[in-house]
Image (cartoon, rainbow, N blue to C red; front, top):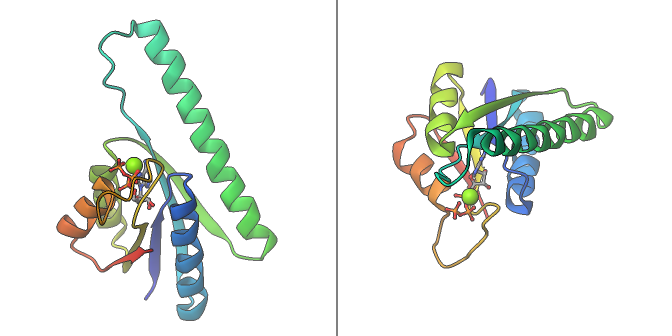
Length: 139
Ligand SMILES: Nc1ncnc2c1ncn2[C@@H]1O[C@H](COP(=O)(O)OP(=O)(O)OP(=O)(O)O)[C@@H](O)[C@H]1O
Ligand SMILES: [Mg+2]
C-alpha cells in the first residue's frame, strides 16, 4: 500500500479518520496526503463582493486547519502532504483519489454537521458508493 489519502473537514470525526490513516501509513510505510475541500456557496441572495469575502474566509480557515494538521504530524516526524480543493466535497474527494491513484481513501463516518440521524454523512455515503479504490470509514 503506497498511497493513503485522508479526507479532512476539520471535524472531530475527521481527526479520528486522520489518526487511523496515520496508523495505517506507519504500518505499511505509505505516503499520506490530507485533503480538504472548500465547499461551494449556493446562497443566491449574496452579492459578488460578499460571496468573495466568504469564500476568502473559508479558504483561509481551511488552509490554516491543513497547516495545523501538517505541523502536528511533522512534530511526530510524520511528513504529510496537504491539498486543498474547492467544489462539491464527495466529487472532489473521488476525483483526487482517482487522479492520485491512491491505494486507500480514509473518511470519517460523519463530519462537521455531525448529525447521527443517518448511518453515514452524505459525503462519506457518496464516497463509499462511488469510489473505485478501497475506502476506510472511521467511526
Ligand atoms: N469538505 C470536506 N473536505 C474533506 N473531507 C470532507 C469534507 N466533508 C466531509 N468530508 C469527509 O467525509 C466525512 C463525513 O462527513 P459528511 O460531510 O459526510 O458528514 P456530516 O457533515 O456529518 O453530514 P452532512 O454533511 O451530510 O450533513 C468526514 O469525516 C470527512 O472525512
Ligand atoms: Mg458534512
